[in-house]
Image (cartoon, rainbow, N blue to C red; front, side):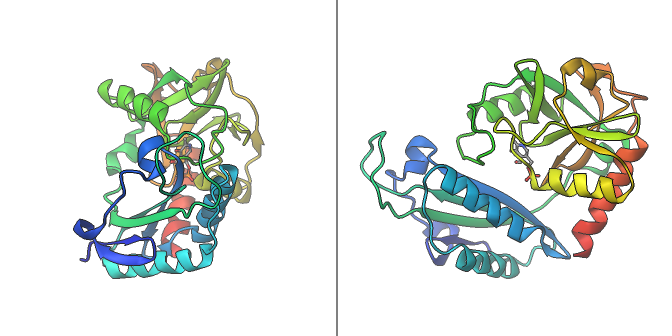
Length: 280
Ligand SMILES: Cc1ncc(COP(=O)(O)O)c(C=O)c1O
């Protein structure tokens, strides 16, 4: 296994990578990122992740020229890693300059990519479902940008972990937005429902795949606002995300959801998703 890291056009050993203390990513969390998984089929939804990376960067006025070249370097990095199941992290920060809130035009972004082994979630989580909690959404109003400034998400996920829960579902102005690192779905009368892709959620690549799979499997899908009461009363609730996959939720804030077991439609979607991920 090789532990090479890509940094600004070069492949290096981790210990050889020098991050400048004046990198705006380090000082201001001024940057964007992506996480992509790979199993037998290679990097899953590579194009979609890179398209979102570019959209996120443009949304913050971070200008990077060569996304195609970067994508090729990502494939090379993955192939060199030798991991059968891997997770690729890509980060683009605005660049390096003397600390000042206002940034200069024409800064050269710093690009980091690293691969790690993908452990995956325990099989038991998918068999029994996971417990989650709800928390107030304390993020900014441009959540559609996958920015590295993740403090509210970090605090929410840690609260969940400390309470023995898998994830924290965020609530803004009386409606469900995202998990701290996942999207939220419910099933009501066999209809698959998720909040609309506004600026208040990150439009997950997995979210889009699952909406497509649900339609292919013959289920009606809807993107509409979901109140916490509606979530608690749902027949099934599940989370989606690159590393979360399709995760059944059995309880929210200690209240049982549906039968308290992973729902049939949730597991159909889980199986369809796994098939796609390993087959492509
Ligand atoms: C806030 C948030 N919502 C949703 C997701 C799921 O997105 P994806 O399916 O692209 O991994 C993530 C992923 O990290 C996230 O951070």
